[in-house]
Image 1 (cartoon, rainbow over the protein chains, first blue to last red):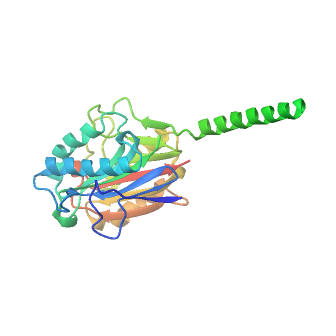
Image 2: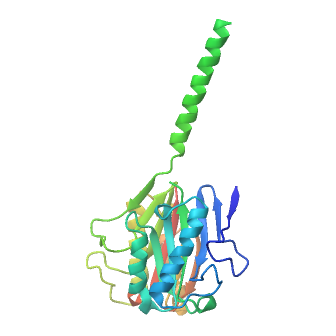
Image 3: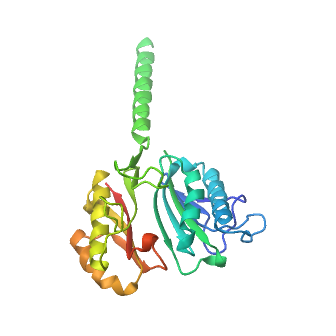
Length: 126
Length: 152
């Protein structure tokens, strides 16, 4: 019933969680921060670069599970600064040009490893 | 011999037909829930339905007519957020009674009990599972944001 999704193309977990878990055709992807999977380190750069890396990581996990961005139904975007909202949206919109997922977005006090952004994702295979 | 072969063929045909039907029933339909006045350039939909589950975007106290955050304090904002949430849930063909999970984001944890009073008006019986916490900031400087998942 429960299937653990694991890929070397996305960052290894930095704590006691799986990259993704699939159950009953629904894929739950752990919050992704902009870690380069090859170095295990947070990438350099601002919100635009960090958002792009987050999406590379989400894409790798979706792909490993046999899902695509068009299957995503819900995103939760956590920012370290609400002032990054617009720049984040510009990158975000490129990954969801149509059939856009539901979303909640807000700024939190701090994110793991001092990241500027973390995105959690739910996808349902259609 | 001919007769038993005939029976085998009939059984095989019936089986394949019913398998086909169940495959069609299992096909998951993804549906975007949107309104006429939803801004086209917004990178998210008000809600998505898939697999008899409705995922509703975080709602803030935006007046649907003006597209602006309403004036007023937490009571007015909480009521507007829940009105907006109900509106999206119902547009998706669900009811507030179908809501199984909410996330309540507050800009100030001191508003928790005021929000609960208004929240109860919208979920008077068997309220959904919930998570509530204060965040650093919400979009447009809102005081409250609520997202939801509903299951039919």
